[in-house]
Image (cartoon, rainbow, N blue to C red; front, side, top):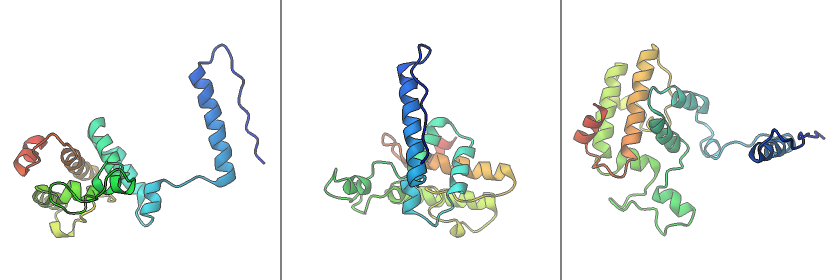
Length: 185
């Protein structure tokens, strides 16, 4: 059995640092005993190429605020009606605007003007990639599992997708296509 050792509390330590050392030792002991647990989202979508998605999330040339919105979308921690119904915090998983099941995919690409914005965005991505927009997977805004060369093309795709996610998750915006285009400008 692996025995962890925690250095004793010294005058140079803060109370918080000491507690963190204890916590880290307990976590290491648990990992040795039970193995490293997989994240909830990895368990939910086991066939997804998560390393590519996380690399893209960190490589996106956007602000930290936009990256955090993408993080919430990728890890499915946005409080959609679907998620709230699973946690029993609401009675229904239906969208208040359109009545469809309110998942993260629905919120970003399907509800209200989302289809129009998604179509416009897919056309722009198709132009950058020089391919038919219909071949661009609908889940790219949620799980951007792609890698393109040259790096400038990859960065452009990630920038557009990240801003789409950030824009659609804003509740205080009108969320129309015209407003989205102004937002990108």
